[in-house]
Image 1: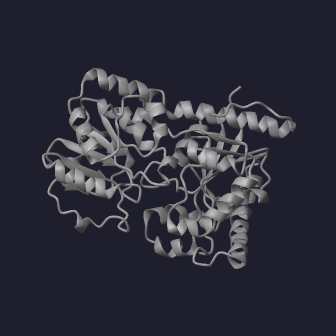
Image 2: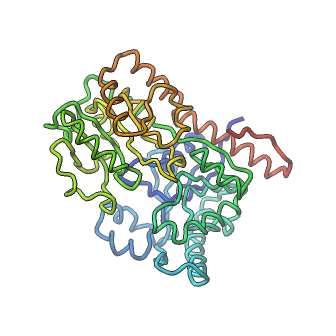
Length: 411
């Protein structure tokens, strides 16, 4: 029997109103279709409270920060509530050690106290707790007594501000929960060294959204107006994962094509002034709602990620979003596991020469090839993934409650 009518608290690293669609919040929305889900928004720090004081996001949260009686936001999904916690002290600047760990206990106590009040006020019983990549609060679950504890690992920890404390915190978290779900095989294998009850469930896509790109009446996004075709496009965060040396070579050797990267720009990794080529464009981010109209304007969608020591930990959400729009997709060969899901519909390239040739071939697209991509996308929807997640939660909750070993499929 699929998991239904259960109370699920999801403590996420991602804010519910972030600029880009996140695995964490998407999972929450789907679980809330037949369960009661409480999505704990990433707590503001005191520094965030000052920095974002005049932003729309702050104004949404302000009535809830310091009111335990008005501490959650109702959503358009009846079974989904967003819990807002009080701001917590900014502690990441502290060196790793006893002082940091003591300060972390205080932060967990602040958030835990708010959650306890919500749990009591809403009479939540026997709930499942999912820490969705918020490794900064590794033992919060011990304060609220869930019936099942889960760590949902969606990415490797690689950014300097994360690794400073996050590597230690994540190990503590992984060891202390009942089960771990990771979005790549390599992540699953690494977490299994610390917690044998580890599983692999990859990312998926909101196909119903990206398929809107197939609507002949849909207007191409204004952000692509006046950009010369063919457009070779990327949609997503422009940060460390991208192989910028590869991108420069592609731009230089394909002067007849326009390369458009749409998304928030991390200027630590890319300086716009370094890219002066007339066929390279960084127009900035657009709301996720515009994804279909953006993808409709791409002739080819690309994933030019680095192949490095962390690449095989990455299972990008955008892969199936691209396929669901019907667009040809070209990628680097950063994660060999992706071939198991896309078969021969996506070329995975070793270098700029192979990438250029794959783009050339992809521009000769056919309706038959498009239908093949759409079929693959249809097998990798969030509806499919949520069924797998719910089955794992159901099995492990039964195992925990009965204290008897229960067989579970592990990919």
